[in-house]
Length: 256
Picture 1 (cartoon, rainbow, N blue to C red):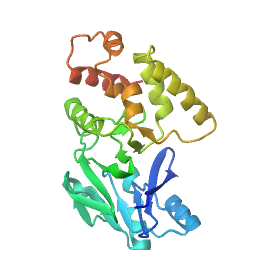
Picture 2 (picture 1 turned 90 degrees about the vertical axis):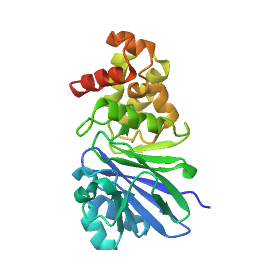
Picture 3 (picture 1 turned 45 degrees about the vertical axis):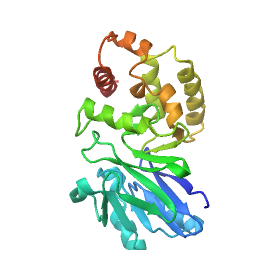
């Protein structure tokens, strides 16, 4: 089986959509298209035809291109069934455990709510890729628009159970700001310091910092490191629960 091709498509100011293609089957999906024009430009340049549109959640900057792309290509729109009413042009609703595949490439659908109440991820584990939308970012996590700290911590914990080698494709280029916040909590984390040097170099060249990996996030993302002694000392929360530590970090990030 040929590996999935994954092409990053910058959209809007700092969004990323992703073209995901199986060359043997001629199947090509776009994940979270905020707008149609950049997606169509890449498709035209490569001679690819779009067959699917995958949405992780309903926010306009992840679904704004749905209708135009569906009309242009006849693509099938797949998104969270529990948010069907808010997914433009949806055809197929999926929940955790729903079977979904792009040709021979099977995806595990994970329900990871809190940023929105019905947020999902598509985990192509055999292809070492997970599309996390706005739940898990590189060195960060999404705001709690429709959920609680406990809900988000459960969602992130679910993603942490994936193989450490799995590449993380998230919805935004927030890595530099996220890393600066992370350093306020855990400046003694050598992996974090080293990663930030690389991130600063990439952003100075206007290059993407995505994808990350689950393993790298476990080592450097404070929102996955609630048991870090240094983070707990920084927050003066040495005896707090994991959810309490996570909630305090999320609240601080909101005003950082």
